[in-house]
Image (tube, rainbow, N blue to C red):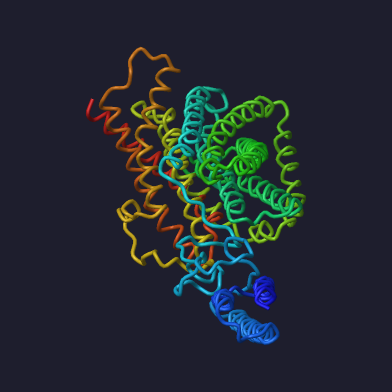
Length: 551
């Protein structure tokens, strides 16, 4: 009798586990039931009053009653949360937060939540790690953070160094000497890496990190939709940037040459389209590959986009504009035909962008930040165009891509990381509990959370990184005279001030955009990189003016 009863008891424990795994939620009631079963099984050895039939009937009614109550509780809770309260729907899961279906009473405490969903602040039992769609927020040590950021940061910095040296060379080409408005066009076109490339990299990195990319078809629809969206934006922004540069040049010089306007529109559109397509393909490979090898795409995607963006865009602009400049006089209609051809491709990219709901939505809602960022970058181009004619500011052309690029790269990493953090911890429109309503510049660096730690690391990397890049420029140029200590002081002061301001602005901007219901992956980086261009060019110009007064 004892053996038969014991076998039936343990068999029923297994049955209870299977029943619990098929119910809509995992509650402590089921765990308590299993503990009761074990204790009654131990009591069987000393008490023989209960026979096999009575014990089995007792357990049957007890389990069925608890399961019915538990399922009813789940249905009421689901209906309550689905009624629109708190702005999102509760979808119950059928497994534990650790994605297993087995239970142990020792793993839970009385303070653990009964439901695991992103609606609640913490999802793991007796833990503090938040989840979204069953995936835990990955944790990083300072060492891993520095290692993952350092190589892409240096790579992107060397890209800006090459872009600065290339701009220093091509400023003496015929097209740059005769069509001076092209200098106004340089910062907006280089800023496309922030408006488009870094924005797409941040969106795809967040999608990969939070598990939005499931099947192969979903992955390719997301990739194709984002690439097509980026081509639409590149074509339109390239054309608008040329019109803005022509208008600013007309205001300054009080003269408008129609052929120069056509040349700027053609060169800007072709450059933006070609550079965006090449960089987009490379970025998709970098993001997918980094996730496969276990590296956080947030740390390497945006710097890689920046490292390729400056040199590719500036090289294409110089070659394309020089070629069309020589063709403009014998064949003046060629610029109109080429520009019209690329504009006519826009409807095809619009159709392809409808492949994914996210890119379809952004096709109508993402124009405000990129156009505003383009206008802000054009102001930086206006400053750059003024420095060409002033002998005191001749070094601004060489160093402006470096200081602008480094600041934009660092702040883009921070923006992407904060956006991923918010995606993990709270729904769009709500802020996590650890975020205060009052912000200050110092609070961005004094917090002990992952975002404060990354801000400290990024600010620390700014000065050593600039020292490496300045020394690289000195070695490549082969100048007999190294930079003076006065130059180092003013330049590093300008660079560190720029990064300090940007890292404080990004903390406020990303949280405000999130609270307003706007995805910071698509809205924050264009503003931030445009501000990096404007602040970098302005501080660098001020640096050279102060140097001229001191020396």
